[in-house]
Length: 434
Image 1: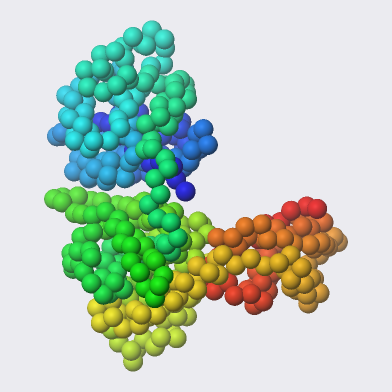
Image 2: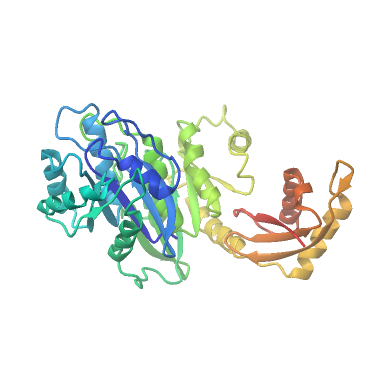
């Protein structure tokens, strides 16, 4: 789980991307002398004082005269909406500008903790220059140098202090599932159909849902929470990067969920962006159910269900474990099958296998197909143990991990799936030397 989301905002060319890179410890963002180069948000995760933090790098804000100013402003607005704490970056070399005052007023309206980071304090002689930034109306500014790494630890300490209070438990034993996918694939309609009542706004306009909407409900004695991820609100001439935005929105929802419903559009088919969105859920080890929506609009004579299944399996080769549901949120056809599938996927992700039974399956698999030899050497599979659930994670101890080929790992995974029901959930196999 993420303990906090931090947005880095400020006008162009004050060093936001450099600060982001310094915190991340690698060059994840474009750094360029030309103002306004960073037009797309980038995000990264890091840990400080045992807290897992996600940082969002943004393009600059400028009142007028800046290319793509609307786009950059929109991206900052979205990042601010996502953030628990905001780092407002200014430049010690340039002092306070008109744009800085504008951004300060904008941030005061968010009612969120703001830290003023005075960047480019590359020498102690500039340390006294930070005091003029009290005029922006915030607490003590933090002097930093993205170039030399000065003050970064103090800045991160300040972020930790300003994170929301812990100990607030929103949900207890509810099964939480989120609905992800490209804008306008029918996510909100699917929520409404599952709840059988209008709890969220449904519209044909892409991006109606502004924020993620959590809706607790009860079905057959079981408590659930459905998390509907937001689409994109388009305002004026905004060239939003749909792909990065959808992934960013989906990340928070996925991290809070026990199961992920990945919605595809039966009318428009599979797009490249779909793979990016669901890829994060797969990497996070979450159970996944593929929901092929708008099945009522598909020409059944031309597109048989089995043909579509084969196409989905070919496009998403890393999701062989994910069951596929063909539904229509509009007509509610087969929507009733989703909650039982969600329950099954969740239970499978929590499945524990006893060590003795697990080793019987692994040793049978090794006898059937021994590990391949490499350079005259053959690896020995010694024993296995399950070390975690959600996702089920197994450690296999071998004589020489360097001889463990990925294809043999895939073979053992298939053997485990044949022996135990892991439908809907990824499983992880780790290899260790005895």
